[in-house]
Amino acid sequence: MIEETVAIEVAFAVPEKQQVIQLEVPLGTLIRDAVRRSCIESHFPSYDLSVLPVGVWMEVKPEAYVVQSGDRVQIYRSLITNAKDARRRRAETQTSKETQANKKA
Figure (cartoon, rainbow, N blue to C red):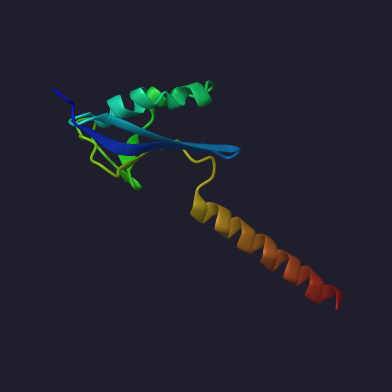
C-alpha cells in the first residue's frame, strides 16, 4: 500500500538569512511534525524553533492543525522592532533633518 503524501514548504527567516524547504509529508501530518520532518532547525542552530509559533501563509495555526497540500508553513520569531515604532522614528528623524535644513537656509 502506498502512503498518500502532501507537498508543502517550511520557512524560517532571520535578518541575515532565509531558508525555505520543500518536502512531502504523509497525509494527516500535524503542523509541528511537519516542521520537525523538514529538519530546518539544522540551518539555525542558535534558535530553538520548537518554542516559536507556527502558521500557514501568515496566519498562526494551532498545534492540532493538519497541513494541506500547497501549505507554506512558517515559523514566526519575535521582531526586534515594532514596525509602527520604526516608521515613527524614521519620520521624526526626517522631520528633524528638514527643520535643521530650513533653519540654515
